[in-house]
Image (tube, rainbow, N blue to C red; front, side, top):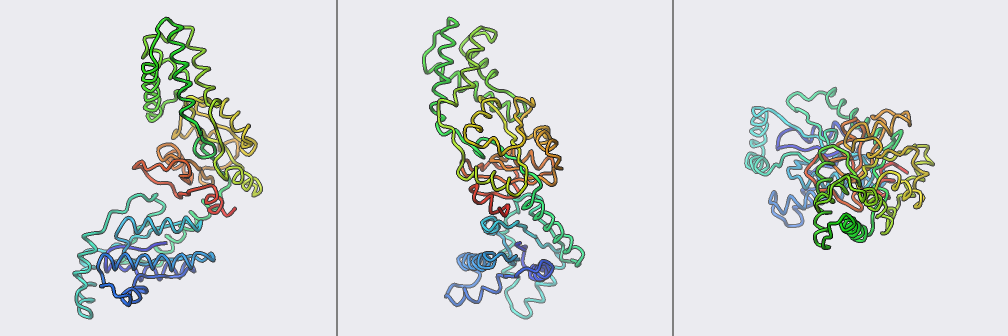
Length: 410
């Protein structure tokens, strides 16, 4: 946990009380400032503060390594400082929370005036922190707690601790785990080959329909159709090889009902078999570890050019299908993620309520938003694709299946 806020908002008092409630180690910025000053840096300069937070995180790292809980205490005025604290927690498989302390202006003025009588200059320091304090963004709602220190009661702090413990228990010990497919369990290692084959098949179909086209024209037509599929998908509508084939032919002046359509759809659907589809490093180990732990798994997969029946073959060929008790595909359900029907279709057969389940995927727009919309916890995996879209973040972010297993205590 990191406890932050502007100067004189009562951070140290709150951090100490929360540490006591959690049985955690309290590591404060004030504790390391003397050490940084001894190194010769001028106090409260930007370089000085960077050194303070670097040393603060090192202390936290040392405490987390043997499995202890840690409450960090500092302003955490910069988004990067909060992000580094969160990343440290993730590396240790620990849930992260940022508690932001706030107080009324008159309370802050009184506290700063009292400090200035003892050590002049605090108002200047406080003004500097206010000037550079960045809004708290990029954290899931469950990871950002706000407490008023004008009248912060033990009951209010105990409620924060209770929420943190519920998050920890739900996220680290889920009753079921659902997985996205592409770039989460498997990936297409040779998209250019599959893309080239589809373009070639589109050109063949147009020629067979009496509309011979160049490779460049076929490429453009396919890419326009693919872009339309992406736009439709983001709008929450399902489309796949059939729609993309029809749109591509239309771009080349071929009517959608032409006899070549069916052969083109089949070629589009099977093209991924011409390239290399592989499992992410550690995917087998993750599914095996979850099975040993008695935690059922399900697949929640959006399909595009490759339909569910073909994805199943890929998963089976790679030895992953047997680790997934339920398989949910958008072309079979009729809607893509983040529609809650996709996630319910996976959880209902498992008999697990959303609040007791965890979803793992690589996209914020579909995986994170869909899980959150149903009340599930979420993990964003960035092994093959690091989604930086400016949308709400997952509860946890991991860089690999090894980190995911550490997060789950497997």
